[in-house]
Image 1 (tube, rainbow, N blue to C red):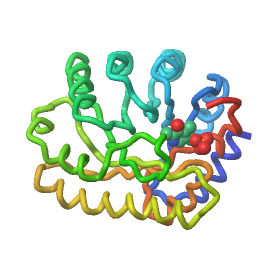
Image 2: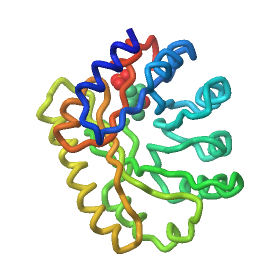
Image 3: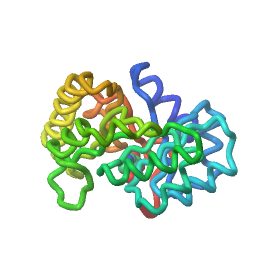
Image 4: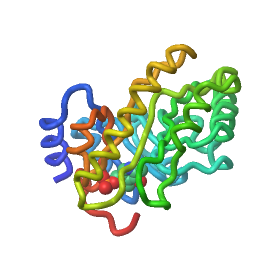
Length: 222
Ligand SMILES: *Cc1c(COP(=O)(O)O)cnc(C)c1O
């Protein structure tokens, strides 16, 4: 079933869209089924869970941290993580830079922008993200690279609202892309869209989808 889901999704997605298979809470056997169907990019939201799956699974997998990151846990994923989606402060970038340096790596990150109405959603305000990208301090971080933006729409049946939120993020992305050229930062990833709203996200210009239940089936818990 997992391989079928992946096959159908791949037919539907344009070539330039990266599919992150969100495998949180799922057993390694399920991830291996996706792996054997050709999937190489996996997303997890808990560092310990990601680390243990990384240890067990083939080493040509790209591991994406899609969840909120606590600074004291960065060290556990710094040896292997390939993209951190939900960065929301300079302090966190500083910690990622430090741990990446210890591992002689450069870690790619996305800034999470708050686009949803819900107060519970994490993310930065546009102005704060803009200031962060322009900051002198960021230029000194040699082992961390901001390569794009990530956002989550409000959890609602109202497709018009979801579409507006995604379009807003696409607008910010386009604007930042131009602004960032002046600082030597190249943004090329726009991570938006989950199982319930990825079709709208695609129409709004997403080039990275984070899909869990559409691939692996429903989860019992988040
Ligand atoms: C769980 C999760 C997803 C995937 O959710 P589905 O609805 O199962 O596709 C995507 N992004 C983030 C940040 C998540 O935590």
